[in-house]
Length: 161
Image (cartoon, rainbow, N blue to C red; front, side, top):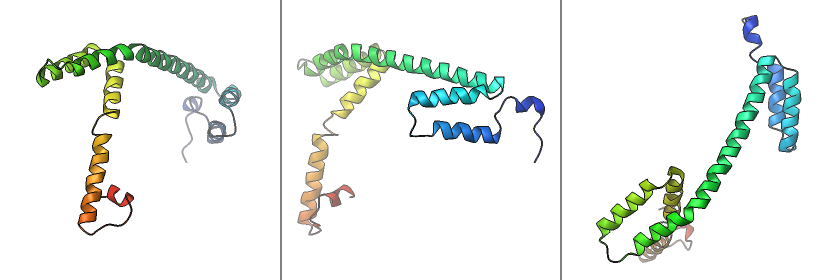
């Protein structure tokens, strides 16, 4: 095994320290605050480079959590209005399907990207294809199985076909 150059050694924790670190962060019996407290104690015994990296990571993680919370709050705040606008378009019976399609596309592009993606996901989640359409498809498969004499007595069998 090649000896590590002394200037590179300070940038990384040795193998024993790495094992200690992973045993701390993978300990399911510790609370998150206990894990962080032990990681800070562990970092105090490491080189300045490692200690600095750990502290920077914690700052970036905290910033990420704060940013994520703000994004979720912004989505939740703007989603009702986006849904209202979409409902108006879909319920307008005086427009053609092409006009409806164009208005929906314009709505999605006018929204904040996160709101647009969330609205699109919700529409997909409650879509006919994912709900009533799936149930109808299962019933049709079941009916075909019964007619074809391949009836197994279990609806689960239709899920693999």
